[in-house]
Length: 175
Length: 168
Image 1 (cartoon, chains in turn yellow, purple):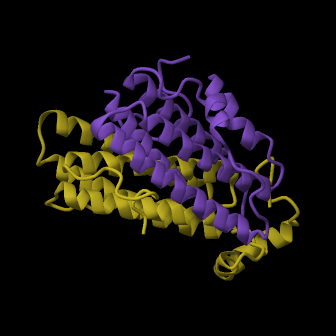
Image 2 (spheres, rainbow over the protein chains, first blue to last red):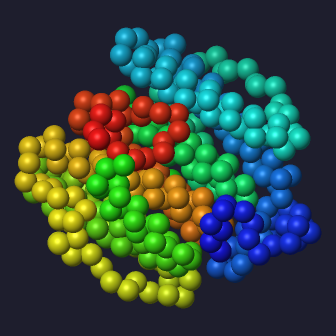
Image 3 (cartoon, each protein chain N blue to C red):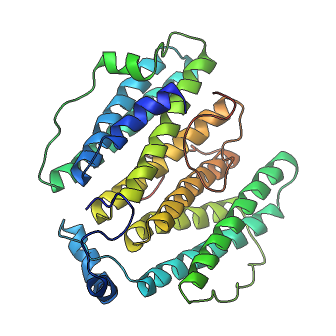
């Protein structure tokens, strides 16, 4: 259904709210091409909390990898880390707007490598793409798509730093 | 907005339904195949191989979006031809390698901007998931093309697409 203004066109408020309880079933139906019920803000908050956990893991992984790098390679990873902190801030704010303050960030792991950071990054990318169907708020959905695209670029940069093929597949390395 | 941007985004702007949006993306992905094939002719060595490989990726994107279209029980109406490459990326493959890479990067950037619009306008799960995967691939193409041009591969925390900085 195209919603030019980005809103839940054609849905009553009650049906829109009820949609949250139906999200799981709706996702399954959506995969079969059936009409999709839009997720509630509570359901959106669950999606966002999952993304924030992924983003924090990516931050911890990059931070640990940074300690093993110097010079231009370190500067590149520092740039990615700054991006990821902005992603986490957006997710945290979106959670607060939905009445679910983000939990405290876990401690960063003690050791790291670019390989591990890439694995975290690929997991985050897949999670962002998966999440697009779980967000009814159009501006937030666009923000997550922009973040997914940035995460895909990060994965390409990390692969370049590792001397690997930066674009191993047509879909960003998502299985 | 650049001429390329206007001509690429027109396809998405004209769309009024989910079906139209997906049709636009299939057509543009097919156009991207032709553009990379044309662009490869203006490149040499590893960059030529890269363009040929990216053409294959664009073909996979077109197939993925065409599968979504079939899920909406409609089919592709028409396919782009060589003249459409001339219209969207005039002179592609005939200039120096930097110009060819810039044009291909610009195409990727504006297609990303178009998908961004698609993600804003649709709530259809199958479209969103496929568009997300295609955007990931396009963003990685863009990162590699920027790197080949000596520009930062991942310059922004939020990739919105559009033209290359520094070009009007």
